[in-house]
Image (tube, rainbow, N blue to C red; front, side, top):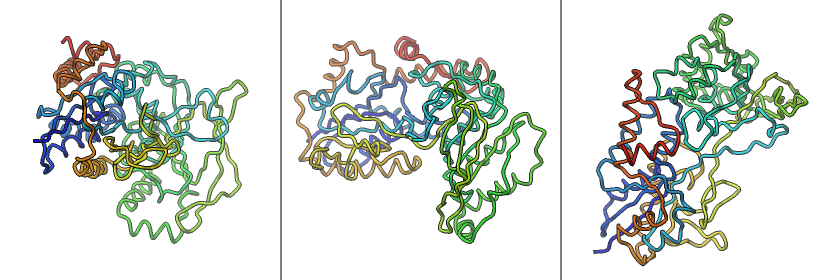
Length: 452
């Protein structure tokens, strides 16, 4: 009977779903799957891209854990693709590979001043407050007034973490160094800027409601942003999600403000055009153009420029994928070029047999977890149908990849190691009445995993 030896690079939801779907699919061959990740722990952006005060969203980890704990998928953590293993290595030991490496870097925002000191990418900040091992342990939180550019869920996460009192994050799995940094923050005002109006936002009602539940934080909205036109009213009437968002915003407009020690401002119809230099290379203000609705859901510039004094600015305008050595890459869109998950060669757009993609590295950083499942189903379907074009590995034995990594001195982690780390983090949290306290340094993660 034919046997598929499959490598999946990326142990976040996209990679785990692809493995699970393939194992459950109707097929005429056996399957053996190895899951590789550059981090010592699995779950990708669910562990390192979701704010620590979002336990409901982190519940997805329970479903992912059930897949891994079946024991029919091997995990190799702390293995970097391109250095510890290469595409040629995979070709020697597997019939095919699925790349599920996601998109973890900030999309660019090309406005003057974006390079100034005090200008940050939201994804980098998220990685810091989520305890990603490859980011610095400290973060410059010295601004009283902060700008957040964007109207998606990441913008709301960043705004909420900046505005929230650090003590209110203590019940979560926030790392100690992050708590200390946020506790010392002098922030009083967080300004969120979106170039469109309130009916065109990209965040979800749940995220928005959470923003309004912050203790000792006033929500500041501006009446000039709520002169709805016919198109706005049609959108509200015809879209339940927008209707709920509008209801929440209207309720906030009725609140009394002025008593809280911190304020969170929502600026709509505000297109950022520059970050202003204080003369010493540091952000001193954000300059934006006031926009106006065009009657069709878009906006047009009015030419009116305004400035809001800030000492820091975070761009939350989307994520962007990273190229992988030996794998085609679309620099414009930040994805691996593909047809329904079948990777295409850059030079002639023909299928790169044996190589597949799923998740954000396949389609770009849009959509929620549910989209990742349908993505994986599409990719796996093609993988199954491409049986005749799989690679013919020189040594497909399950022992071969272990021998290769050991020979190269790669201190990889496995599923038992993740269980060790998971239990250790939970035990640390229990000592303080918390669900978990993450281990942050990579070396300590590996040590706890492999030598409990």
